Length: 64
Image (cartoon, rainbow, N blue to C red):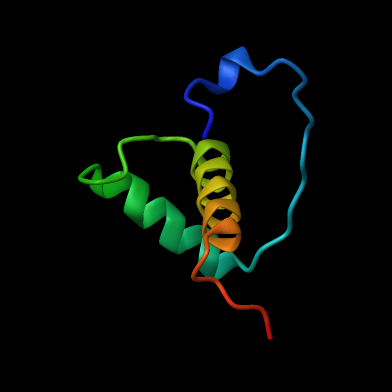
């Protein structure tokens, strides 16, 4: 996983659409400030994508 998004060598902008309820839940997690120290939706989404990619590439992930 990349550690600093400002040091990407070839950044690409990704636009996603999600339900308003999903955004509200992300915002609620960010405002709690406990485990989710980032205060930025884009960083939250970037980390979620990287976690999902790591999970998909793990040995115990089975495709349907």
